[in-house]
Image (tube, rainbow, N blue to C red; front, side, top):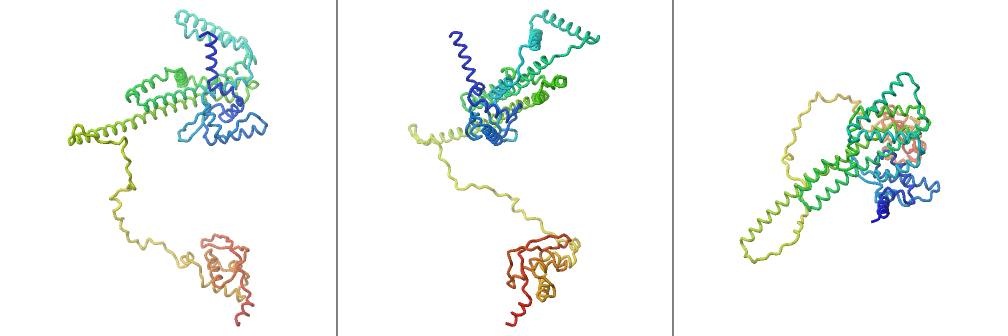
Length: 496
């Protein structure tokens, strides 16, 4: 294959990656915007139902501003489509709820768009100095010549000592220019924004290894012991066998050094407090830099959680599934061998017997759900005789206050109202004029009962009954208005 052909093959392979397929499609700006608005820079998992609703809301907002390249379909359909494109992944959180998160391919696409959207500085002194410093530090740490390393360290020590002595003697302190600070913050933001996708690649690597090992168990083309040995070997060498694992192990080792983490916080705080940082950095960029340590810790926690989940799943599969299946298979084979020996003892060498390929299913109408428990037949403890002295002391008035309506006194008050002894036009007015002992809530039912016995009709209008409880509290009830008959009409109809 010629050089140009091999280069074309490599480029085609790059374009086939999910990162470039996301950026190459016509609706890429809309999809990238939705991902940035929903997940932010930390790629925190989002519950499935919530993301479906957010996608539909964002699409409606884009249609409102007359955006043409808006994908069609519901939020659920679009999320499933993006999962098939390897831009979203669905998993279970610690509580067992389904959540969405961005894959490393989607995060890499967001990082590229973010870098392109940020103001990029041209060739500058800061960039050249950064390259020179990185090359010198790299050479000082990797040079195999002992004498060359010592010479580089001596040169660096001499340079730093001379600079320190110059500053101690009161020499002029050179200040960084605005262009120098802008270039430095741009490179720093670029490095920080690449962290979430790096951690996501480590998580996906753990998930891939888990799927490969489980597939080997289910295929059963190798003994279970060999698969277990292979898993243990890969688990031991996981952090050194892949680039993602080595990068994660390095970051984890650095963050275990509390002194180094404290130094990182101090350096970031000093840079953010620089007089020129307020004019260079936006609020979002300042928040991103200030949360660098938390961003790295969250990424490490997610990777460790994924690794623990993989280990727990494989342990459960190995311990429960394989052991139970092997014991059941061994017991079944022993039963078959026993029955075969019994059958051979009573038949000839050329005898045949038809055996179904699969055993018949047992049909059981009902299975007992509960079995006899002797504790159910134990007699309860005998009821003891209550002590009369422990009974609450209640007076006759208190007992009557807790009883039902006093129909006798209520009937007398009703007769007095009909004879105009008590002025009242309705049952509500009569009730409000009674003494407190006859204005309990239950007395309302007594009055309605007496009115029903006399076939008095009610109106559609409601009237209020201000009841008084025995404890002194009040309660108002709305009852259909019941007018009292006119005493004169009642007196005229009585002789007839």
